[in-house]
Image (tube, rainbow, N blue to C red; front, side, top):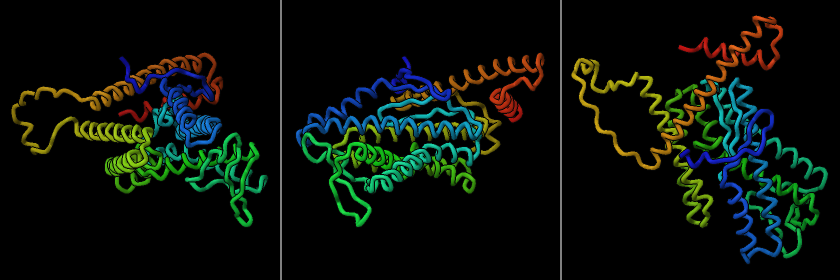
Length: 354
C-alpha cells in the first residue's frame, strides 16, 4: 500500500504542471465551513463568509506553489507537480542545482507571489475604494450581524473604524487578509519545512556550509513545532495540532536525509576508531531494529523519491536519444527552444556526473 500522505487525485494541468488534490482536503474544507455554520456564536449566514475564505485559501496556496515551480524552472530545475493537501501545498522539485542561490530562489518564489498579490489588491483597495487593506493579522473577516455582509474596515484619512457593506470591497479585503496571513505564517516561522526556514538555510549555506546550515534550519523547525503545538493546545485548534505533527515529521525526514548523505560522503565507513581499524576483522552486522511509524514513513518517502528520480532519469534518457536522432536527420537548427534547453540541461547533468 502506498504512503497515505500521497493519496490524491488529479484535477488538471496548467503550464505543464500537474495539480493533484489529497483525498482528505475536500473533507477538511467542508469541515471548516461546517464548524462555523454549527457554532451558535457566529451570526446567521457566517458560513458563506467561511466558504469564501476557504476557497480563497485554496487558490492563494495554489498560486504560491506555482511560484515555487516557476522559480525552480528559472534555476534549471524540474518542478512539474503540485499536491494540495489539508495543511497547505507541496511543489515537487527535481534536479535543482546544489547551490545556495538556486535553493534560495526556489524558496523565495512562493512568498514573492504572495507579496505581489498583496501589493496589487492593497493598491486597488487604497486608491480605488478609499479603504485600508487589513494589515492587522487579527482582523475579524466575518460579518458582524446576522443576515448581513457588513464587516469592520478602516479608511485612510483620518483612519477611523467604519462599517463596510460593499460586497466587492469585502471580497478584496478578505482576499488580501488571507494572502497576508499566509505570507506572514510562511516566512516568520523560521524553520523547515516553511519557506522562511528554507531561505535561512540557503542564506547560511555559503558561510557555514550545507550541513551546518541545514541543521540550523531543522532545529528552527523543531522550535516552530513547539510554538505551533502550544498554540494548538491553548486555543484548542486541531488544525494547528496536525500542523505541529507534520512539522515534526518533515524535520525528522530532513534530518534523516542529511545524516544519510553525510554517511555516504564518508563511503559508508565510520572513522571514529581511526584508520587502523580498517585492518580489523569485520564484526557481524547487528540485527536490524524494528522500525516505528515515523521511521517507516521516512523510508517510504525516501523510496518513493528515489523511484520518481529514477523514472525521470529514464524518461530523460529516452528523450535524449530521440533528440539526438532528430539532430542527426535534420540538424541542430530543427530543435525548438524548449528542446534546446532540455538538451543543454541533460548534457550538463552527464558532464557533471562523477
